[in-house]
Image (cartoon, rainbow, N blue to C red; front, side, top):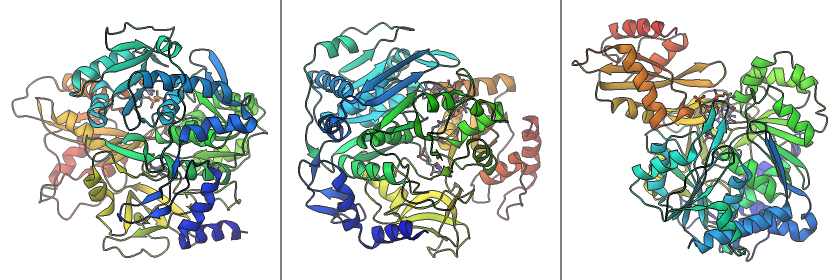
Length: 629
Ligand code: COA
Ligand code: AMP
């Protein structure tokens, strides 16, 4: 039964060039690759060297040429504003071409960076595609980040232009994107020539003279721009993700490998054929949104649904099911957090029962570990396969999963499935020996990784090498620990670094520690992730004030919480913080975050042999108890 998957996976590792050259035939090339796998700069590999194409052409124009002009390309459903819209492939192509024309009129050319800081509205997807159309490199910044985080990305990507909107709409109210953007531009050292601002009716904004331009006016005046043929290895986008420090990493993805891998994944992983509808409930600011709200479905000639709203509260826990029914979605993809939130509001699946979901074939989860309870709940009420899969911003598509469109592999709850083509996944011990099946190790991928995975980190090849390739020569270090079991299934358990996953959002505890330590009253801080019933993990901070501090502790904590919100963003969900006298350390001075995490989670823990002063842990346990942990 597993012949097909096994055979394909084996073939992809034995003959990667042959496998991906075949897959590349699903893409329209202006010029085919001269070298499918370019290993001349190993351990940095490039796919489809010498090839030329344009991703926007492949995502829009070719489908119009092939007769899909009238088919919906993108359906926008915004329960939070009470609006809906549909864009056919022909309309999408026309809108993207004129937006690309407006960018070109503003002097944006191939290779220039463009930052997109926008809410979940169709223009965000159009902006991405317009950049791709003229070979500009987009960098979408998630709206839940605060101005200083946006400023860091502006300084790293040095964009010529920023595309934004007057506001976003969250359950807590209107988010003034323009104000955040203005503040970020004040903080950033790099100055941009122009910002193109889309005015939304619910909260229009004032434009800064000389710098800001009105989106609608610019587009109305622009001639449509044609697709620019770029090298397959030309960067399509930079997407910043959290590392272990407060400095984000700019993951660079190219045009060619990305188009090939995503197109392969649409049919073989998600089982979506051209003309069918995929509903990915995420945000374009994350990699899941890049790959499966925008590029994947459109490259495959499918219809994508973009939701401006939440799994619950906009207006209720039935929103996903209402949308899936209304637009006949064949697959739904979201984060386990969303499923947990829905399950909490609708434990008996009553909202699910109100909808005809017979068109939906499978439900996909990724972004964090899926808890078995929620998966079983979804299985019971949806009665379709609930399929976990594991990937990262760096890889751009699934490392391991259930290739639903290819073959129905038996589902193992708690596992993220089996390695996808081109991924040779294993667990290694500290010395680099492969762990026996079923034993925990550092999860690595043998190089080269398949097409679609990141080319490098923007402007920082050294960090790429040091962070991912140096630890085990010949392998990519995923940063996750886990198990490969006796049947070849991959189980991802936790991160091996200081990255945490809050509601499926990847965040750096190091970044939060920096914010806390920068407060004049704080001499030291430790932040780690603790279990949370809805968000999976949330950050918890311990802070040590300086000896001069004699103020009110709760006022200090409130100020610190506000600081993290202002500097990193509301998405960090930093709400738990406690003042302590000192932090537990090893004799060599390393803070024992893991032990504190175990105490906070109520897990069993053992006294680390290397601890400097065991009495501190009792103090910490008492301090955490004050937080109710
Ligand atoms: N723009 C501006 N602010 C945003 C934002 C955006 N795009 N996205 C989130 N925020 C803000 C929220 O308004 C909230 O602010 P608040 O503290 O003022 O309420 C904060 O960031 C945290 O947001 P969120 O993570 O959405 O938590 P929540 O408590 O509002 O909602 C869930 C809980 C479970 C409904 C929500 O976390 C969710 O939908 N999770 C799914 C996550 C997901 O799809 N991840 C994609 C990765 S694949
Ligand atoms: P991001 O780059 O934001 O997509 O986050 C990637 C990280 O999220 C991974 O390195 C894992 O730690 C975690 N992750 C993503 N998907 C899964 C999954 N299916 N199971 C467990 N962890 C996951």
